[in-house]
Figure 1 (cartoon, rainbow, N blue to C red):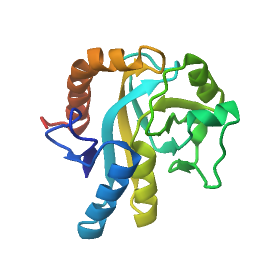
Figure 2 (figure 1 turned 60 degrees about the vertical axis):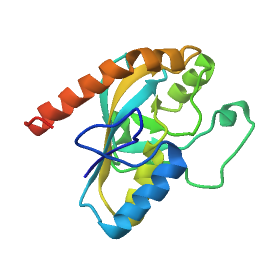
Figure 3 (figure 1 turned 180 degrees about the vertical axis):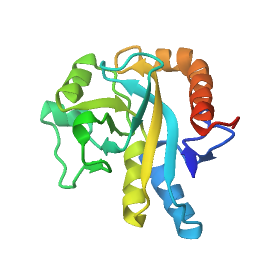
Length: 178
């Protein structure tokens, strides 16, 4: 099963699940309870903390849920906030999910120091639901922006081209027009 966030980020071959951690967790849970998929593949956009370039396409099976305040010693979490499907994380790009977009380049560097390369609002929730239902899952992301002061403007500017490129990538991977 291929899923996406929805609204501006919809694909004809993917089921929209909602934007952000909460909406996607509720909607994907409900979906899995009614019609349990064999595999969940999330497709969408992501911001880069600096390692990956605009329009790079990255596949991942690892996510964290870290808020920016963590890097300023302004918060902690009692939950295990890292999910890893593939135990060989050394070769994996880890995706951080939060309901907030990072716009401070210094914080982006802090994520990189922790081995986290991308930011996407939904992916942690998707892996958490998949883990609960014991469903294999992964994600394919295209970089629309860097996590800096221009994150939103660059996302808007690059979004349409990114959606086209990601659609072409999925078509190439599946061997058919989707």
